[in-house]
Amino acid sequence: MTNEYSPDLITLISDEGEEIEFEMLDIIVNEEGKFYVLYPYYETPQQAVNDPGEYYIFEAVTMDGEEELAEIEDEEKLERIAAIFEENYNEVFYGEND
Image (cartoon, rainbow, N blue to C red; front, side, top):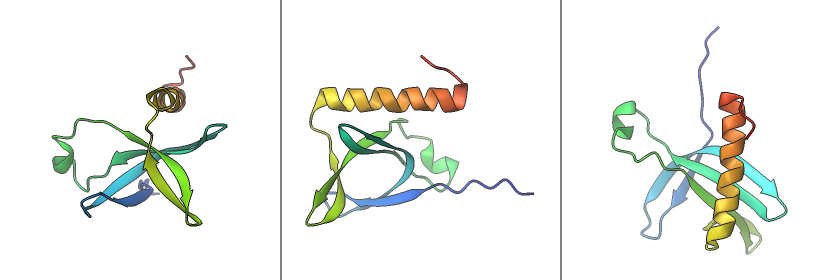
């Protein structure tokens, strides 16, 4: 039995028109909205060597009837969503409940 991992990928287009591929780490839905936690995707470990290891959180917003991802402008909201993600991550990967 092979144990292959296949990440959920999403491609975003930057303001400059550059396509950037991300791995979806989590989708958080709560009373504040729907949020995507993304990490830059690299095809090889060599490409990831200089990555700072930061993940990104975007809020799903509906524009013209379609879901789009937007930066979270409210710093406190961003911190709350990041805390939820980190708690979920620690629980899943380390069995910790903080």
